[in-house]
Length: 594
Image (cartoon, rainbow, N blue to C red; front, side, top):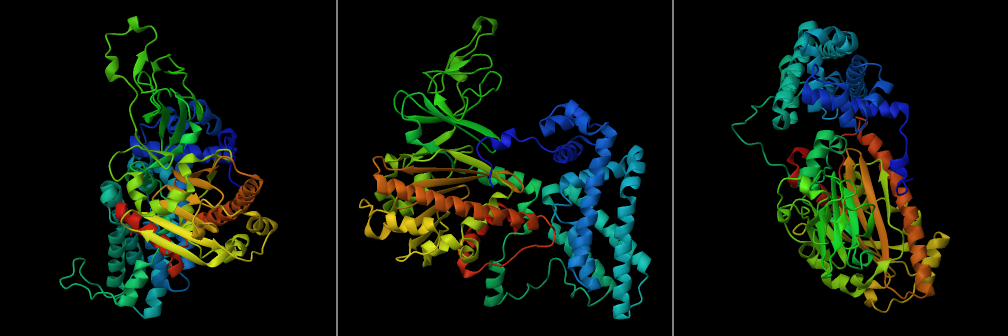
């Protein structure tokens, strides 16, 4: 189940989970500071904890550092063992599996490589490295040697197995050092290709013909059938799990994207505000005395404390920072400084709240933290005529605001949301409600997707689906074709506006890091709903709660296998063209995901 609002914040991590959190922080600290400059305070700050908490779980800095290296060594060993096992009985496939595991970004991230070489390169830590990793290194060498001996026997080739295995380990080590130095410029695919060439030189014909890295003559173009297959490949599994990649996604995709705050009905009076805490940013949208809605970074200009408290409230005409009582009006202008005479002369006109780009579209308030690019209205332009009859601007909340964390990467969540291929097996109740036709309409120009399906004339399935179809009123304010139709309008990368005959809701997904996401949701309806409409709204939400629970189980199970090291990538069907568009848009901003 997803967390209820506030549940995650109150959860106490188990001792094992807290140790893992501290090890993650230690990896980052070593990568940034080097081994000798790491302190428990630096680790604690990165984990958002106290040094005392570090000491509670690890008796000394040395114990923490040893646990960190041991965790990385264990991950690498297990990934290599799983890769070789998955390769089957072919020794050539086993050797290439070792290569790919060695350059898997989850195992060989820049931060983790920095830890490896920090221990290896510091003379005082070399004994520690050998005691923790020596057996793993030897096991890798032995595995490579056994595979080389097996391949030599299979091909009746004369190869000095020890020399070949040492060379194999050495080239992987040298390329790993390159990865540490080059960081984002390092080409993992080229590194894998270099290792393949080494092996092909040892065993001609076993690993494919060798061509120059920059071929003098271009390769023959793929056939139409081959190109269609290549175009349908999914994103690589590692992109759903890698910390460095996730951080780059936030910078390139999410900070410049429109993020949903609320509906205008949630802030009807001057001074009403709603806060938004996502992507490491805090924002507040507030209605001014002139009726205009503005947005600001929720950051006091004095010492950085949030000026607006809670999810929503009313400023009473002045946002007052609870830390040192600096006060800002509803336009973000600095109006009051406690003990102002103790400061040097300040220009209050330059010390207002930092503005955030804000747009109100169909009554929904959006912000984006990096300005530039088309407006929400421009991106939703293809659907304005279809959306207009719902009168969304007039709506009011009909359900409590809800948010919860899910143990799945944000891309994994949308992969599930954007296709109906899984409906018959994943959502039998929903399938009983909907007809077989499903509109799948990605728009590459606006980076939006329209998904739509019509209710069956004769509905079976659960009590809720049968009753919903039965009690749903005509909804005369809608055109005939929309009175028994559910339609979703996805705004890449973060938000979907979902329209039903009886209500509208919004679905907002925010990355919390690799493999973890925040889901935000609320439903709205026109005021003055009669009993039949209220019943339909209640049944609608009951049906969708069940769908969300089913999806949650599916995507969390997928996430575990995305991180498991066996699955690498898949191929998409005609029923998953929306997922293909979604992946195409990600690759445009993240070319390393190809």
